[in-house]
Amino acid sequence: MKKERLLDIDGSVNFRELGGYTTQDGRTIKWQKLLRSGDLSRLTAKDVKKLANYGLHYDIDLRSPSEASWLKDRLPDNTIYRSYPVYPIAQHDHSDLPKVPENSDNADYSHPYALMILNPQSQLAFKTMFQDMLKNDQPKQSLLFHCAAGKDRTGVAGFLILTALGVDYDTIKQDYILTNIVYSTFDQDTLRKRLQNDKAEEFVNQMNAAFQVQGDTLDVAKQAILDNYGDYGNYFVKAMGLSEADLNDLRRIYLT
Image 1 (tube, rainbow, N blue to C red):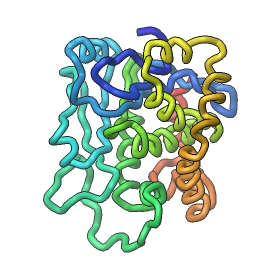
Image 2: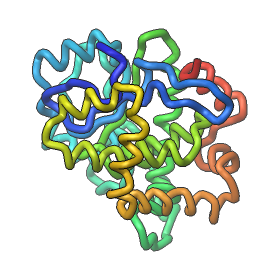
Image 3: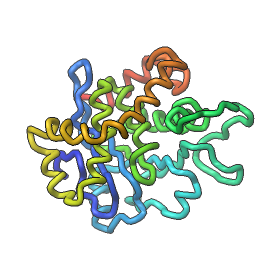
């Protein structure tokens, strides 16, 4: 596959690379390491072969167990599937997460993006995702995270991952709003090509201006961290269980 922001995966939607984004200290996210998408239940045999060649090692499914059972992911044989539901699940549902202690949280979250940042179930899902990221340490070995549309749960996961790697918030927000551009554009091939050229950032900025209101929802997640933890570093330590050594390992694995 070429180094493309929007990948040519016919049976999925909003299938994107995080490679190529630069960090605040001048490093770059490696290509073929971090992927995000929507539904994977309709992948074609050609798509599955492409992803096998892309080294898809982990598939982190952020949907509920019920969603996952209705629309099961189609994956290469060697891909490790993980069920890490972000939203609280029914008692009879089962996932790959440890059990969240009963009565561990009685807060009433007024916004779903605040819930995804602060709720113990959500924190456990993202915390466990980071642990798999630390294991994804071989060259050309990629990790994919997704929900149904690749927008909200995937968007918050992308925000946390890019923040941990040191990408600035404006770039993170551009990547988040890019979802709206993908869904509003019928001709995906033309969009894919436009995202490859040397004026891609200018194009994305122009398009993003039309979707700024939708992008403000990510600000809720950012503010929930700052209001409740003071800063990102404290959140990663206390909520995600990431030590300074873990963060350095993540940057070693995913940055160049």
